[in-house]
Length: 175
Image 1 (cartoon, rainbow, N blue to C red):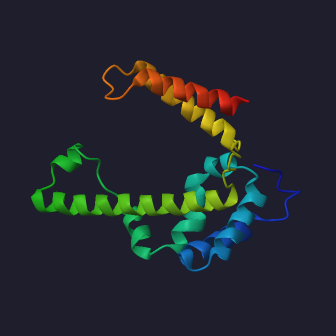
Image 2 (cartoon, rainbow, N blue to C red):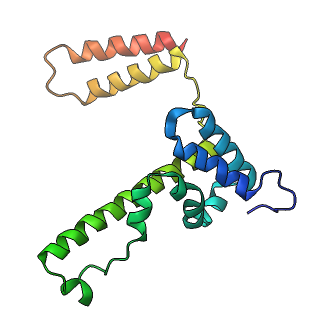
């Protein structure tokens, strides 16, 4: 995490921006961009916010999502196949399964919002692909065709003449 004395954005301000973005979801991309900007200013790197992911979710995301998710996460469940779990009857196990699924859904929702905030704060830089010239593309394609012709054993056309013609085209392109 960066030095808090030199920061212009405080944690509370960062959390509030994220809460607004989460609570209003995709209604406005500006709010997501604003939240991402504040997260970037406060944390400095994706690694720094990821280190405190659970606390950040508790502070910025849980208060802003639908309340049934927070309620589901607050429910204590016995571990599956533990002594306590094994004492549950069929109806209680069905309830346990439903609550467990609600907890999974809540965690997935929180993780989705956390990932979205991190993506807005620290967008992956697109690698600039080298632009290949038309000449290079033709050279590669003709060379591939020549290789295929040389490997072919069951062609229903004159493969030798075709290969010669392709090599002549390749020679012409290489000039």
